[in-house]
Length: 215
Image (cartoon, rainbow, N blue to C red; front, side):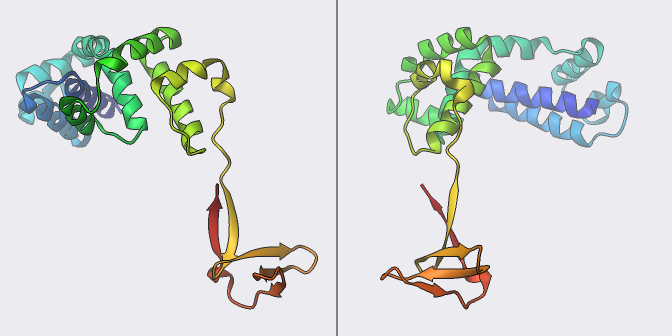
């Protein structure tokens, strides 16, 4: 379990370095490689840096976690990238990953600075980064289930309703060869409704029934 915990910490550092915009890509790769090694390591964690060729710097981070249960660099990165994390999470909820977000920001198709103020306000309002992300997730789930567009400001507009926002229930209805069907509880039979509104007894196999999501 401790291996997994530390691996998660190292992967989080790599994630935050990416969000921060770390240009030395090898650093990010080194943390991800170390995390992968940890996940499969069976020996003494105190010796992992020497035994598995993990660099001195990352080895010190592992030792720090073993002694203190925390990694100072991770805490610093979490604070430093707080606003960027929330912005990245908002765009992730819109189907845009970090790489695509950066490319769009570079092309100016997304004006990144336009999101910094609301992201900061959302962190302050919710009380933390993770809470802000959860608020975004609730609004995204609610809006997407209704095919509605939403902005980061929508979270503010819906703030007092967040606990009541529920995704729209997905309703599936049966069809056979494009025609709607009904099940008669009295007859215990399926019927196909033709274009004239007539109920025709279904005589095919049930695996031929097509279930469609009705929005």
